[in-house]
Amino acid sequence: MCSSQSTRTQCTTSTDQEKWRGNNLERVESRKSLCIFTFLILIFSLKAQANEFKAPELWHLEKLSQPSLHMEPVRENAKSRDGLKLALKHFTRVGAQPVLLIHGLAQNDRGWDAIVKQYSFARFLHAQGFDVWVGNLRSAGTPGFKSETPDGPHHWTVDDYAINDIPGLIEAVTEKTEQLPFVIGHSMAAWALEGYLAGLVYDRNGRIRRQQPLGLARQSKIKGMITLAGVYNLKWDKTITQAAKDPILSELDFYRSNYELELLASIKMLYLIVPHLYALPLDWVSRVLYLPLEQIPWIGKRLSRLYQNLQEQVIQTPLLSTLYYPPNSDPEMVRLHVRDGLEDLGPRLVEQLANALNNQKTESYYHIDRPADAYVYGSVRSRVEVPMLFVGGGRDRLASSREVYEDGYLATQTKDKQFLHVEHYGHLDIMAGINSPKEVMAPVAKWMHERK
Image (cartoon, rainbow, N blue to C red; front, side, top):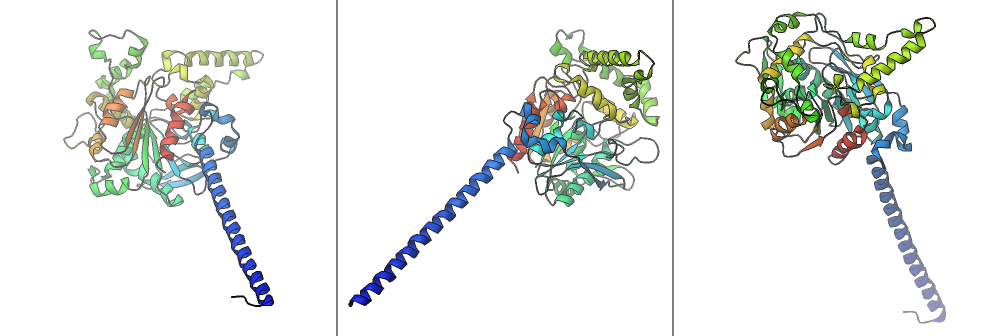
């Protein structure tokens, strides 16, 4: 209690000081809270900017995308189970969620990273905040990103991809990032990835065996899987055997058929010849498209322009319909893709595809006579536990959307699964089509962001 005047003065001063300290402490705490709140708002704001474009179809024009569009990817290396050096094209974003992209049959990293950069799936995902890795399977890759080719004939199969190459690619990304990656596979990669999930290995006699504990361990090493135009079967609504009773009567019917492949798969003589070839080269396609006509004196430049115009007109016709849906394909992108985006076909890969078509199921490789122990890749679908997104195109004449839905989505028993049908898309333009950024790339990025 303050009795004297001087004591009261000191007491009042002390009390005022305590009040000031208390008020000042409250102001400091208030400012701290405000700073933390502002910081959190900024973080969520930046996250929203990284995760969503204002207009995905114009993503390449946004300021946010420019570093991704113009960056130079770096080469990283992985090792296959049988000792081959495999190349990875890395669009670096240190510390971000890694995504591994794997190409399909006779393709390479060009399918994921189009020369016309606005159609580059890899650069789109990088601009969305992901650390992007594009894997090249054996013997595949653009200049600077070429994977090693085994000695001798190109007699590898989907089984080699599943057992030797894909485990090496996934482990390399996991080790280098110390994170579990999302894996995105196109076309035949979906087939091979099912072998990876099943835990397939070769035994000492070269026969395929499934090791269930290994399959479970492999599934635990990825965060989720997405397949675009995945080959889960090879079948069509309109078949050549039913052509008389159920003919093709419309454009939609045409895109639900593939008489060409059915006819090729039915020619028995090809099974005696093709598997023994060294390789089925496709580099001639690039040479035909890029004839050096401009070197012809006086008329070379004019001939070159006319030839390019002819190519663009051909691209817009149904002649390439097995690979592209013309209305969704930029002719210039297609021409440039062919320049270095095609790989020689392995003869036994072709036979394995023909067997799948004839038997209507994806199986391990065999020559002519099916062995009793042929492995059925679809048998793993009841044991898949990883989150999965299946994307199918309504104009795909190789892996129809119906096949992706019935044999992929419905048959796979994982609890977290989604199916995305995109109507006006063919087999290759589902990755790099005119409308892919908005209707395929953006939904894929969103699906992954929701599961990071």
